[in-house]
Length: 216
View 1 (cartoon, helix red, strand yellow):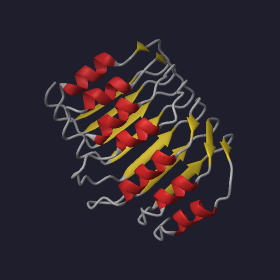
View 2 (cartoon, rainbow, N blue to C red):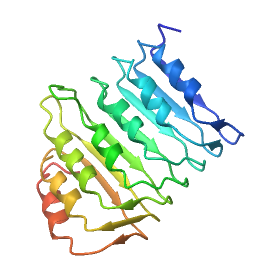
View 3 (cartoon, one colour):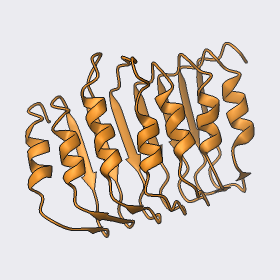
View 4 (cartoon, rainbow, N blue to C red):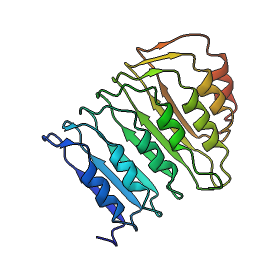
């Protein structure tokens, strides 16, 4: 299917298992694809990194919408992040992996999201939903990545959603605030960190939000 531009697949409430390797290989063989939406809620999928490996071969990919809620996903998601980072035209990333077993601090995933040096892609939307996982550590690299997206020369980040309810994220939200302060053109911002181990003051986060004078 070398000429497909839009792929939307929904496999809710089944017994799909494994590591998505076959899907990753299929994605690699669809070089014209622009929109990729995969919904595998309520299954037994164990890994989605292979999807990122497949994305590297899709130079026209602009939107990914992955929803793998209530599966058995583990690992770091680092390869998935790299797949996004190496997609030179991607403008929207929507990733819902609520109610899984992800144990990482997301540093590798966050670093992988960043565009390759010299890339000027128009990154518009970043929606990450990681509720009810075992994610730990601080959000330093994710905050830095948000700052990178906010400074891209072709179209700044306009929508940011971060959901980390019921995780083991700790530290302070200063890293997110530092990243937000570099964006300045956000229109929509949604942060949810209920039932985490985050502490400290919200001063730096407030400064980051205040820097975005176009917020709606």
